[in-house]
Image (cartoon, rainbow, N blue to C red; front, side, top):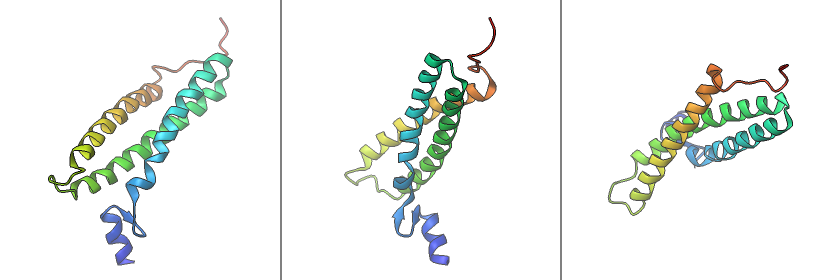
Length: 121
């Protein structure tokens, strides 16, 4: 049990990097949210807007968790390592990407982008 906890603190679960396990979820869910939003807009179906909201919410949430574990991996990478520059750029771009979609999610939560397709004119 202690080894599992120690591995978790070092960004690993059962010997595998947690960051690598999680990054696929926001990479899939956030673009899927955009697709649901577009389909909902064209079909005037509120169900697609709900799908877009929840896929964006889960994508941003898992993205934040993946970023935490990615920063753990990055902290263990020495600056003289060949992958350090690429990892730095990767981290910077993904933090910006996550912040942009976090703002979109915040706008949806606050109701700034809330709309109903079935409102009477």
